[in-house]
Image 1 (tube, rainbow, N blue to C red):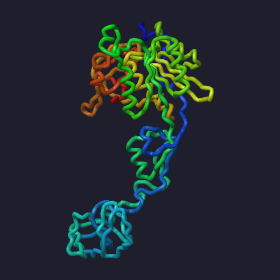
Image 2 (image 1 turned 45 degrees about the vertical axis):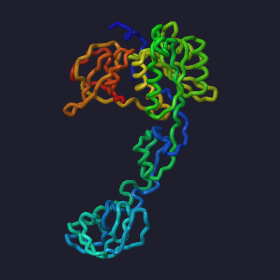
Image 3 (image 1 turned 135 degrees about the vertical axis):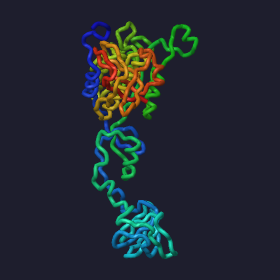
Image 4 (image 1 turned 30 degrees about the vertical axis):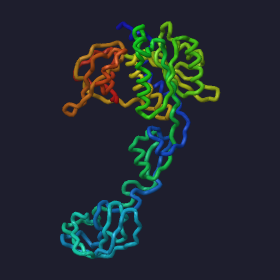
Length: 409
């Protein structure tokens, strides 16, 4: 098979991802307040220092009761007081006694069961009756039934989601050790960027890459700095040299192929970066560069060079940028791919393709359908795409075959 995707020396997508994971070293570890640690990766295992619940408590608004056995309807109890949530009470129940209790309140000593208020009839200020049968130990949350002291709450390498932060907060965790988030510089290359309609008339184009990347990082609450650079070797050299001294990751778009004005790769190598890979057997995004610079203080700067076409940038962000950022934070795993059924035939291509598709469930099966306008300079189908799907190189794909993909926002 001939064509630009069939040239020798190209590595596969999985080989590129494995190289990123193997060659990228995690950044330093630091402590953050838990409420500032969203989307960071844990650098330690966390064990509970408390029981949850902290004490046995009522699961409902009702009445704590002391009885010998399961209760029959119309059982009568003496009402001796009230226990509110968050308030200490020294009340102790004896056989035949009850107290008014509220959800989350500590169970008094002597309690054998709790009757929810819907099955209790207040007969007087000091007497209640149970209107339904009631089992022993009903609606009592036992101390430590969810979490016990010493139990593992979260593992090193776990990403702190909203739910994880809520769970740790409930367990009394106030601060966590996390991997430092990388400082990221984004370099947009090219003289062809239009600032207004008049620029477009002169042959320039509007920039999609900078807004795409800015929004991509903002979606996960991460801060970056964007730089634009002209297509001259000197300008590229001065900027990359400066950024390599101050940032953990330099992400570039454009200027990474073999054209007369593609200076990213030669400049990067001349500045002492070690090339980890260049060119991946994929479509879009073949001319991709990943390189590493070891600084004099033994810290590192990584450079991920993406092609300039917007669809290639989008694919590169979803798959490769995510992998690099995760690896810098100690999480070294390839992307999680789902499996789905292809709903139509696809022609063969020399390179593995990432197609923007629409995924939906049909009769309990996940199915994917390719969208039109897949060329690397086109983005309009992202209005409707909810996944990227991997189509293997060198294979005619048919309806009903299983493919891998990832969901996108």
